Image (cartoon, rainbow over all chains, first blue to last red; front, side, top):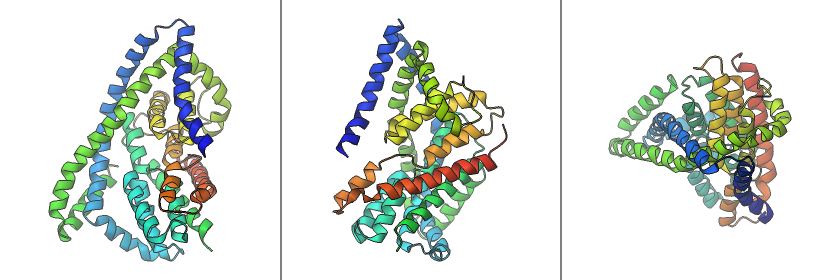
Length: 173
Length: 190
């Protein structure tokens, strides 16, 4: 674990060193080139922000209004038929929607059920095996100004569901 | 999004009114705008910084070199991609950063890759197959060691916090492979 951590911290500084070193070797005015490049970042942010805002507002409303709870309660009877423990359903939904929200639910689950219980293990695996689908889609598609993303959204959510089911199958006795 | 977004908002507000969460919703609307700008600002710095370094790598020809090395692997996942495409380098770096768990660095590289892919995209209003593949790789986690989860498990007194590493790998790889297959089946023809 320690070695892996060490390497992952080493990667970025080494990469920057390589870039600077190679630039100097090729006789490029690295500083000017750097400054010129950073300006592109501004354009990217102005393109991301509108999509980001729309997604964040919708998701937070969904959470706070109790709509998510209602949604979970509606689909629970169907999903528990697939041998899914009811405790992990809110996490499964939150995982695709909000990274911070999912961490909060995982913490609660680990505290209540214990990290080494079946539910605790399943929840940890769900958390680790997926990323925040909606956030990634908003940023990446927003950056290039593409609004027709329904196909990608469905594929992303299907992937999350597959990871969710595999996590449960792996830990269930 | 045009179809789903209004439904999520509409459904949430109606449920909120019936469950008496009116005040919370108003606060939430203001807070969300704030948190959206906070998220953007938190990635703003690293996106600019990385655009700067990438500009050096591009002008010096370092990126070309990296592309040549990464191309054989990238080609398997992105068969539509041309050998000379400038997206190859960004995709390779986005994937590497994701695997070692540097999510913050992966995002600016992924955005850069999206921009390059958009230049080659024939229908600019829709996602190409390559773009969808890149999205799948970022939406499903390809991180090799889920450090945050392990740390959280340890903090709640797990006897073996890292025992989830293999299951996580199995679950995420199954999801990624399924995602790639789905893109191949349902993705738009280029």
